[in-house]
Image (cartoon, rainbow, N blue to C red; front, side):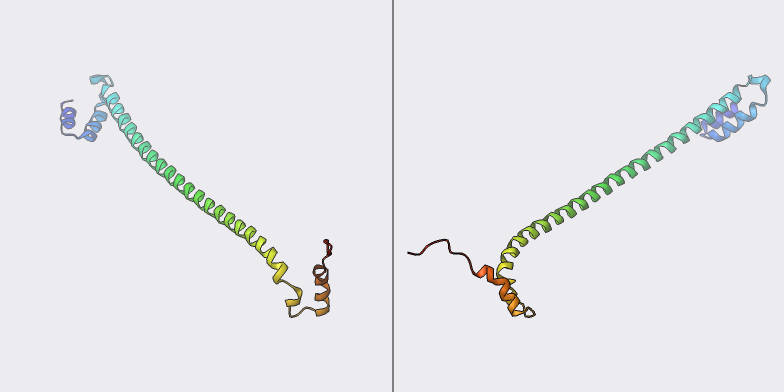
Length: 138
């Protein structure tokens, strides 16, 4: 036991633990106390290793969670950007369609199409050229 104490004072816990296990062979001297002490030291080491392993696992999980949140934020930004772009295109399209509708009445004339049949083009425009007169001239 003096040797165990000296090993512990010298911070040689592993050597003290081994010596406690070897002393446990002498049940008649210590009634199994050495084996019990060695088992408790071993349990303490295992608990400490488990605690360290859990701390490492928790640190990794926190890092993974932070990465997942960051990636989700980036995905949300990308989706918002894509929606904004689609909204802008839709707005430009609706503004463009309104001006194109007016432009189609003036610039998409069948008479301006070089491949159009002149007689058919003129016939297509005739109803729009002749508007009924609603006012009477005096």
